[in-house]
Image (cartoon, one colour):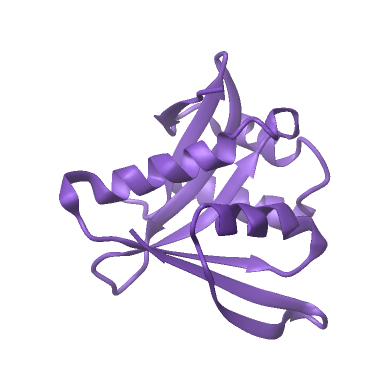
Length: 158
């Protein structure tokens, strides 16, 4: 099902919080960090946190947060990709990544995207998504988040 992808609007904070809290995927700490980025983007026109929201049938189904990596000319970080629990399995995350990639490549620009994620079980679907979307794992930092929870880095040249 094709989603409509749009930019962040002033009244979207509660929508994004609802997506984050649609199940128990994220801890309270993770939700807090995600909302800090939302607040930065809503309160700062020059924010380096760019949000795109996927809507299906007029309802927010997911979002992606990405932006330029400081001190680089064409590298970007994908910070968050979140799909509402009720919209999973409908291709929302893939559509959001493709929309981000198309935007970054607009006008023939060169771009690279870096993604960092956890080895924990709760991020297994995200790791599979990055693999399907052509983001190979390029680095792993053992016990980064805590013992037994590595930081995994994926990276793709567009």
